Image (cartoon, helix red, strand yellow):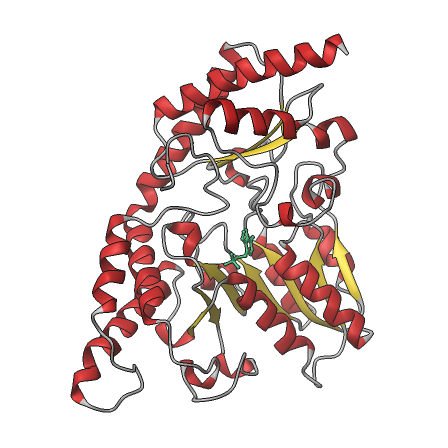
Length: 389
Ligand code: PLP
């Protein structure tokens, strides 16, 4: 059974909350097909409608603008494919170097197949995508601009509103990957000015394998998959009602707790930094120096003179503490360093010594003290060994 003790990998995934589990168990009792016409299927229809309304409310959308998917990887792939395969959408695909691979890899494949220009905007040294960089990339015909709202590795919050103005000026479709923001920060699709936005339930205490795509104008996208006409004809297949109910409950809960959550993670971050300073540990923060541009639940740190791999392994094996080297998904690949930190232009020592700490709802001040003590011990030993070599 998994253990939340020492868990500092909330950006990779979050545990189901009790309210979400209850909603999912309740949904298991509703076995009818949501597309059925008899009266007994009202329960499951109500449940699905309620979940759609709760997800919509989380991001300031209308329920008709929400399509449930299997997660944000699917949502991102769908938008990219649907827009880039449209005959009337000529021109480049503009994105950033710090996107999740759900955007970068699918964009690369599609642009290669179609011979389409693939323009990648670099972030600055703190992980923020410069609006001027997007502006420079948006010349000539531009079919699609896709930029994330919050970076999963550094917590950098991107200037989406301004970028939206540029995408609009270029007549491009504008997609936002809001996976690390939805349920964590206020997200309002109207204020952001996007045409579509992806979210994933398991990042805010919902189940894995379910997510959503907000589409401002549902007629703008070709169906993800065709068949029985479910999800407004945009994503066919009998719906995952248990997962969808869980996502709805998670969205409602996240919305109700947003202010408390922000205060909680802000205090935890400050406490961790002050503990690290009190113990006289030397480190650099990889991410924005401006706290208003930082998701407070994420702290990406580089410790000098060590390989973060060794420290992360020690924390896990000796202290039972779980932190990440970068994004959980990129650890499945063989790339040597985080593509995000590399794009920020960090030097080799800083890349090698980087780890991501992310916390959330169930992290306590005692967990923070334990993490700081374990970091102090681990660094003492690893830096001592390195010096002796
Ligand atoms: N986009 C970002 C920014 C993410 O952090 C992740 C997951 O880590 C994804 C997309 C993929 O989401 P999912 O796990 O729902 O496929």
